[in-house]
Image (cartoon, rainbow, N blue to C red; front, side):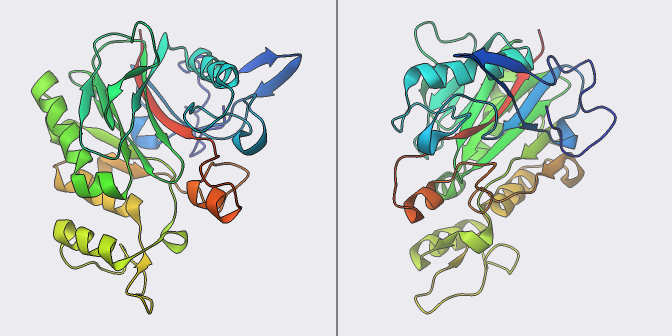
Length: 290
């Protein structure tokens, strides 16, 4: 497992199968995970997956964790099995993501499927369950309450940011587990960068309704049509801090999913390359240790 940033704790014995290999039709591959310093804690396991180490082919190569865009289900199932085993979890749990603000409380693994239902955030206090936020340009956000303990995985695209899915997840943790925002730790995974994410004026207007005047850190220069580059990861960071999480407890991993084709899947890059709708997905995932 490749960790970010490099530290003596990365790859320590507390991480199950830090470098994981598994066979598939005679092949052996190694997974590549990213980790955040704010979630480098005993009692939890977390990772931001990359494209490396799976069995999918074509536009889904190789560690695609999403079924919904045409990849072979047996390949996705094998990819998910590898991640589950590498992180020492009992089961991965997903949501049918719809860019809304519904939060799903997970008390047990789904019996007949991978998904816990329709929503864009998952919360749990049950050990062994790896909550997964699937992304391919959107922002994965992971939360950990070390006192309760409890965890959450949030899928936050621009629509989810406007719908305030992040504050909704934090509020749901408070209602379910008594979580206080001031004790939360948070991590924001790789997403599309402002330089590669031009949105129209109608989207910027919705962000202004949430954030007020949009400064240079959040948007780039306006173009002739009134659009601009948007930093959705920065918007997620601001919502985390506004909800009461200390800034020092929020980390944001570098990397642009659009620009780094070797490492990440990207919806916008797939559209640019002529195969819109056919692309894989990585995950931000977090779970309590058994």
